[in-house]
Length: 285
Image 1 (cartoon, rainbow, N blue to C red):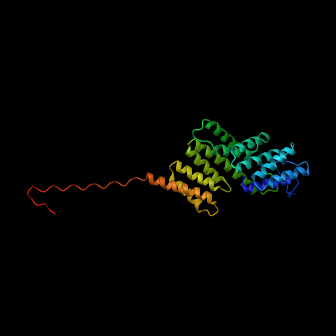
Image 2 (cartoon, rainbow, N blue to C red; image 1 turned 90 degrees about the vertical axis):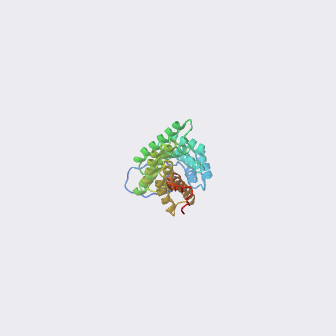
Image 3 (cartoon, rainbow, N blue to C red; image 1 turned 60 degrees about the horizontal axis):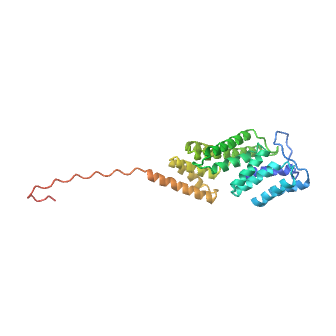
């Protein structure tokens, strides 16, 4: 979950659990928030968001689901478990819990985005079930984007600009998943278009997406465009060193590819041979 939006979600859930008293601006359409039924349930909900790491978060969420079977926070707890497994790079469990989230809340766009991205990242060109997987990617990504178009704010006091920025960043994730799906089909022009939409449409463009765009430019043989994008990543002082390492490697690949296709210099024509001197005549110097 993007950090800015996660802050909004946690604050909204705390307010719903009675642990914050939000400001009360004029009434307007907002998402319906779940409610706790007891102080014990409120404490169990807060334990999820106060967990120091992914494993502790999974444990706290499972305890909520076990102790409070009728909790209105069921889909949120499942979503947090899925996100925690995503953080742990445990793809199988992420899929299980994201799908459970959708069974409980068919409009959980966050679960859809986790599934779209995770499946796309692990689908390869020669997978026998490639098209079935990529069909799911497209389904989840497109559904998430449709939901986000008209999704109201989680709370009335959330600033409009923050909410719009969060929706842009989530929509960017959907486009990135579609770009990854296009790579699996070797449709590089489609992938380039989707990654550009992800970068240009995001409120906070993800440098990792820019590296992926550079990589696809290389795949498409557009090495100058790759270098241009990757130079921007390398020049950003805020980019994580690991991402910069990937950018540097991809940039080096672009230069190597350019050298490989550089036309060879034409050979110099051979000088014509001088005629041999007649027999008995001294050779001219």
